[in-house]
Image (cartoon, rainbow, N blue to C red; front, side, top):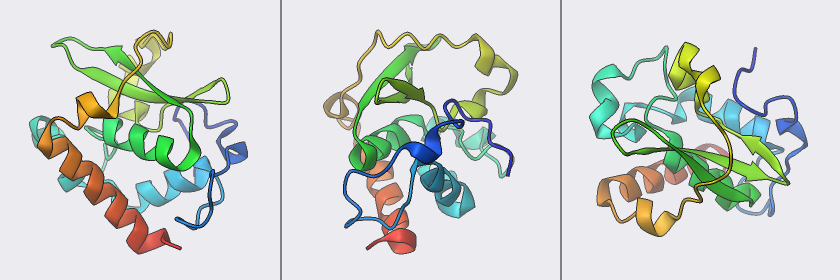
Length: 148
């Protein structure tokens, strides 16, 4: 598989904090599992579902994925302010940036500025009930496939 997400070059060196919850070897392993049917239209942000497809499975998955990554691998979640006032979320682990869902932007991905200036909190993101429910669904689906 050809990887295009931000940080893919070192993602195999990022190890879970605790292997007792999920059977995952690395952040790269998580990306593979999410790509293999866990990211789906039901986990996509409702406002983006009309554009979600099997060719763009990372669309609308950023915040719930970033917080799941933080659960498993630690680090911080940051956001890039987008037109319309929403944030695109990504992770910083061990001083390196990782964005498992950057491919949703296609050619525009190269213009995103990852400056770690907008820390994101799950309290703010999960104040939206639908987003929290999508996060729980993502966790549930991952546990079904890779739960310890």
